Image (tube, rainbow, N blue to C red; front, side, top):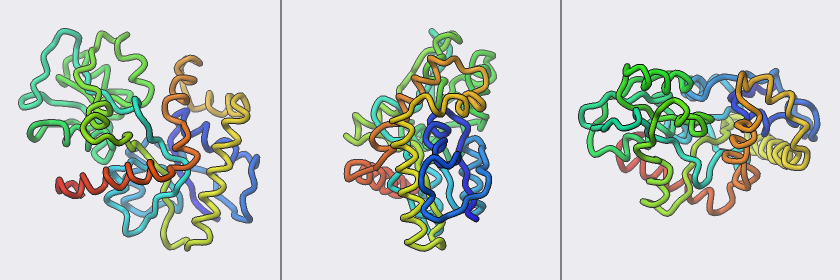
Length: 265
């Protein structure tokens, strides 16, 4: 029985709903009850080799490639969907002096901040949902926000200092790789290909039957408004989620090579 982990965010529950509810062919494989956890917990589990199949940040992927292989299906990658560096509206943010909250040391958001900043940045790790309140309270001068926060930060009196995804796209020409699905190499090529197909079929089912997963998504979306859930899914689930394809694989490889060249892996 294979272990599986992904986040409770709407994009992941949307993608995995059909797979975890027996709505697609499981290719003769059996899976344990999935573990749902925030992305940084999943990143740390991958570093510890805890799960057979797991969502993780592409930053974390760069640290575990000896043990895990990236699947072609299930990724969050695209344009106009990167993390935002925010601060209080009207406040200047000097990255040479400021403390910036990040949603996990191994998140892609943390890596993009390191690549964007002119020098080392003093950071503080927080759960992603705690970052905006911490900036508002003045506990940190800035924060790198992800997930649904990009739809609500203005309601908190915050301003976008830099769209880090946009910076990446303009600097490199590539879409930004946020997170992907990795499988333990020890599963072997046959099982890995089967898992890849199952997830791809689950994505296609989700696109064809958008309302089927609504109850499942709402169970984990806490107090998120339906409009935010819909925007979240539309932003992070796209053709790259069904298959990275040549463009997606090139973007991921460039991202990993770039991080390696900067000494981050």
